[in-house]
Image (cartoon, rainbow, N blue to C red; front, side, top):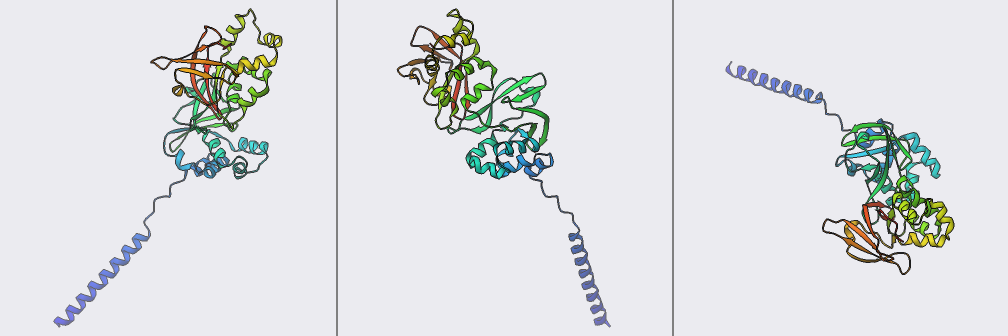
Length: 326
């Protein structure tokens, strides 16, 4: 009798263990798993930025732009497709093949600013982007602020703003952005309208140098105010009248005096003489202890102030002058 009771007790224990295991397995099978994180590119697609997000994937930038706080100016699908049609390709893969991987990647990076900034915080001027040139200097784009309207590089207007996805602050724009040469950075800024006029009128090698991307230059760019001062010193008040009175080679010589045959950021300039692209012409750089820069024109006693520095283009660097070198 005792043995029978022990056998029954043992069998009952086994049954309990089996039932408990079965319930535990069944419970495990019904535990809800956490949702899989949505990638940055997928979230951009959900916001109507499918083509641009595809470009990020092709450029291999998703991890880089997701690592820190950035502002993204993102072209909408319709405007991005219009651009692809304009350059004669169908997809972002085709655009990559047209530009080459390195240039395509920099074009994509050119849409990012390395911090959060809202349209209300934007002011007119040059702003550095995440893109870099061959010297690894950060490229600039130009912003124009008119009331509540923001326009980048005179081509892309902010349409919808302050969308947040992960670490990105996103503003939708109505055209893609492309990195600019020195000539491009001048053209998008109305403060250099007189210099633009002189470059267009002179043409020749000066315009070629400012437009090409195979070699780097430093441009010391006189502002419009500098040109007005230059003209008034001769009793002339219209640049067109002045240019009509001299030959184009003379205009080119004046412009060449403002160009160096390599790219120098302000911090790379040293006290001393620099050869310009005008044959036989030099000027002297003078830096004080605060880093302020002046230029002594060797054609006379004129001392010229560098009023702003380090605007970076695909093909070099631009600094602004308050006077024209003669």
